Length: 329
Ligand code: COA
Image (cartoon, rainbow, N blue to C red):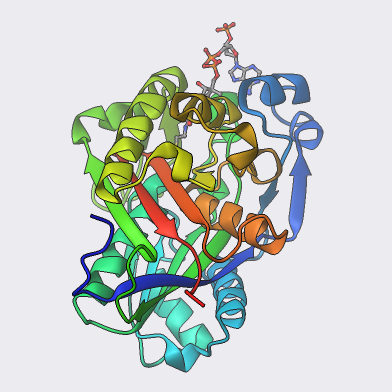
C-alpha cells in the first residue's frame, strides 16, 4: 500500500539546484580529448556539462539547499536532518553534510553523508523518509551533490566525456497522514558482485589515493535497463500504482539511450519523461534532483503530480521511488 494511514505522510515540499559556473561543450572537450561532438551525442545524448573550478562539493550543495528552502518557504532553523549523497566529498572526513550544516546555519539538524554513487539520491530519499516516519525529526534536507570531474581520468575518453558536476536538493516534511501523498514507496538494491564493471581505482584504505573512475560501459548499460525497470515495477506495486498513473518519470541522467529504453519498457508517453542529460551530462547523485528542479522551475511538474525516480550506479547499487509531489491543498 502507498502509505499506511497511521504513519505521517512524508511530503516533498521544496526543490533546488546549483551548477558550477564553467560550461564545457563537447566541441571544447574534443580539443583535448580524442573524441567528437558527434560521437558523444550519438552514443549518450550529451551536448555539454558544467565543471567545477574553485567550487567545492559543499558549495554546490549549499546553493541547491538555499533554493530548496526558499521554494518550501522555510529557513535553515526548520531543518532537523541533513542527508547528503555524494561520491566526491570535500574531504574524507568530516562529512560534507556537516559542512553544509555549518554554511547554512542549520544547527538544529544532525547531518551525514550517504555513498551509493549514482544511486545516491534514491538511497538518501529512502533513508530520510524512514527517519522522518519514525519520528527522528519533522523536516529533512536531502541533497545529491558531486564534483564528479575530480574522479575522472582525462586521458580515458570512454569515461571522461560522460560526467558533469552539480547539486540538487529537496525538502521532505512529515505531515498529518493523508492517503496517497508524499513518498509512496522506496525500493533499494545492491549487488557487490558487479564491483568490477564500475569502480574507482583508489581510496584511503586500499591505495591512499583518490583514484579515477573505471567502467565497462557496455556491461553497465546491459544491467541498467533490466535492473531499473524491475526496481520501478517493484516501487509501483509497493505504491499501489500502475505505469499509466505516473505523471513524470524523473530518471537518473546517465545516457539518453537508457532513459528512452526505460520509457519504452514502461509504455510511457515520451512527453512524460524529464531529460536533462544533454545539458548536465551524468552528475551522479545530483542528477535526479537537478532534473526535478529543472522541471519544477519550468512549470512541467506541479503539486499533486505522481513522480517516479530511478537510478543505478557503482556497487552495483540501484533503486526507485514513487512520490506524489507537493502539499495537499
Ligand atoms: N569518443 C569517440 N570514440 C569513443 C569514445 C569517445 N569518447 N569512447 C569510446 N569510443 C569508441 C570505442 O573505442 C569503440 O571503438 P572501437 O569499436 O574501435 O573499439 C567505440 O567507440 C564503441 O565503444 P563502446 O564502448 O562499445 O560504445 P557504446 O555504444 O557501448 O557506448 C557508453 C559507450 C559508455 C556511452 C555506453 O556503453 C553507456 O552509456 N554505458 C552505460 C554507462 C553508464 O550509464 N554509466 C554510468 C552509470 S551510473
